[in-house]
Amino acid sequence: MNKTTRVMMILSLLVLVIVVFNREGFCIMASPQLHELAQPNGIKFFARQWGDERAHGWETEDRYTIIKNEHTNYWHYARYNEQGKLVCAESRPDQGIPPSGISKMSRPLPKKASKIKKAPSKVVPGSGTAKIPVILINYSDTTPTNTSSEFEQLLFGNNPFIATGPGSMKDYYEEISYGIFSVSSGPSGVSEWVTASNTHDYYGQNDSAGNDLHAAELVREAVVAADAAGFDFSQYDNDGDGKVDVVMIVHQGKGEEVSINPSDTDDIWSHRWDLTSAASFGDGEGPVSADGVVVDDYIIQPERYDSRSMITIGVFAHEFGHALGLPDLYDTDYTSSGVGEWCIMAAGSYNLTDKSGDTPAHMSAWCKYFLNWISPTEVIASTGTLASEDIMQAETSPDVYRLLENPNDVDWNDDRPGKGEYFLIENRQKIGFDEGLPSSGLLIWHIDESVLDNDNELHKLVDLEEADSLNELDRSYNYGDSDDPFPGGTNKTQFTDTTNPSSRLYNGNSSGVKVENISTSGSTMYADLSVDNSSSNGNTENTMISGYVYDSDKEPVEKAKVKCRGESRINDETDEDGYFEFGNLQEGIYKITVKKKGYKRHKETLAIEEGDEEKLEIVLEEK
Image 1 (cartoon, one colour):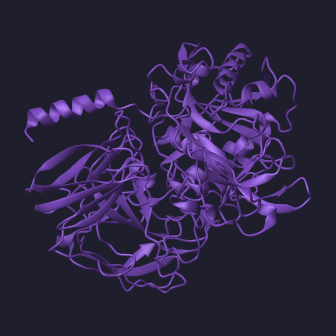
Image 2: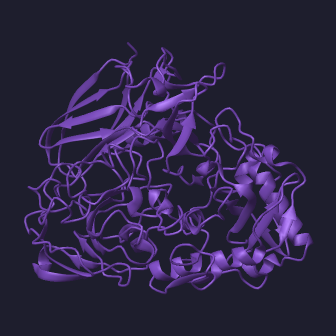
Image 3: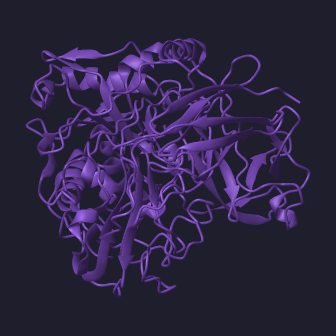
């Protein structure tokens, strides 16, 4: 394929692709906490929420999706009808074992939405002290419980008594950044409560897709009311661009993400977004000018965790991570657990020592690398073997190792892929804000910055190599356990190309990465670290096959299984744009197979030479 043809094909694809994008740019995942639900006949069972603001629902303790029958109020197992929609099956959770043919983790098919401006990827600098305007807003028909001074302590105090975990959000960010970054409430402090013009149910009511209809309208009212009360927003432009970096809104009551009642759909789901994008959906009137600066980007979270408890810091710290530019590292299509409880940007936002979210996990080593809070020690072929290398605990030391080159450093961002596949190694212990971790030990992270997110469990941006090789995070079996770190309960002391899990690259090639003779878990751990001289991660040369998969109407086909067989044997899955990619291939002949339920299987064969970048456009025929 010549260069002109390739360019024209790509331009055509850009015109044809309908971008799938939901309303809120970034959200927090639902709390994994189990709740007791009751059927009309009085029989009770345990269930939890799944998903986030973009799509959510309920599932049983053993991960079967359930739906409430609106006519009978009974919960039923969910099944797909002929149109691919989730509907009630005949059987119910109170009747015992699920029937055959009912799959675990059944999820609604993705909905299409028009393309909108995405929330800015990074609005707060990651060093120094960020001043955050915090506005408390009550509804016209409710009464708040907690005071402005209590939120000042919870968010910005020094080990405040009001925090049931190790400390405040300020304490959290100072610990995980090793003192490089902190937060404060700035000269205006946390605002007193202002009152919205409408009721609780007005702002949190959902549209047909489950999105809050008027959350941004509430944010705008909060800013306008606080400005009228004398709050000085001009002091909160940390980077001097004429905009408040991000405003933090606390609404009265609890958030939908921690709901214990499936009928509480009029609570607001915590999220980060911007008023400009919200207005394009008819939510509010857009940005606000106040004190000579513009307020646009926001994060919103609740006052209460439940009727008995004030909110903890986990949701606040997670949402603020987005303001620093970090992505969600849970699986936003809900088919896996992402990186689970091992990182605050996934289920780690709910880790606890007393109350859910009071002891959020440290960020993963990759997040800290992205934010320039650590400078990993590089281990490449020319380094030789670092024998019995000391690896200090990450809670008190920025001691992280990167195995394989990463020539462009961290060049990932949330709207374009970067370049670099490598491994990060850190020692995580159950101390400080990591006290709520499932266990302690050496965590080995497989990073591929050419991937945008963690939605494809077969090929993630940030993947935890589970020492027990059970892939329970990928299978959404749990959110992490004591056998995930090395050596763990399975006593895995080696990680190489030939172990399970292995250090092979996503294309199946040898990486040469070796982590051997891993010591028992402790504040200082030891291991032999090396990279075989004969191996390469391909970061300096890229022979690849990529492309888009469409249906006959030129609509992207998501989650199609794509197999590549030749010198390498690799699998991928198309993303929401129908895109797949196989990189760092060897020269040779490859057979590409694409299959998706409801479509005829597609096969083609092609030969590639070293340095080729072959781009395909594949149209699947319906059966």
